[in-house]
Image (cartoon, rainbow, N blue to C red; front, top):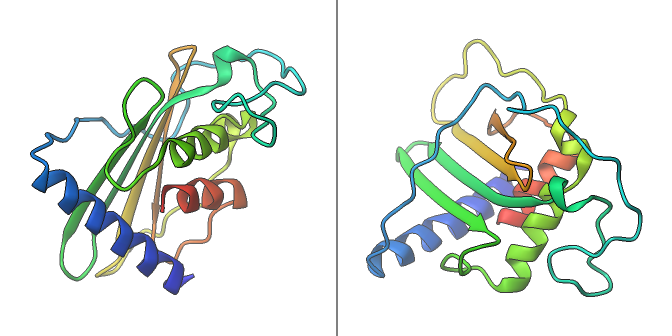
Length: 167
């Protein structure tokens, strides 16, 4: 897992530096307490195609439950870095992302189970030199949920899948 986190860190540092070089201004997002802002949920519609509209990218959600935006923030570590990536259906891919990678992130974030996912509690003493990760998902119905974790804390596989698609 440490190698994975190091790879994610390296990729995101390059992405952010590329954005800075391109003169892009980071978008500001708030990080909540990890609970959905709305509990409205529609039943799944099996076989619905995802954001690519192509076979092989099938998700089981209705348009109101499809993710439209994912904000990833990483901070901390020994160097005290800050990385921010915004993936949105309505915007061009961020530096280092392809349209296919954006579609993959939004497809994972559209999994209806993500709304009710129980995250592993964070330690009371997070110690030093850990990375903090904040991921905020916004769905088409306007609801959103913020997730917070630290490096070294095991989280549910669905959340790990979301982090890995952002790498």
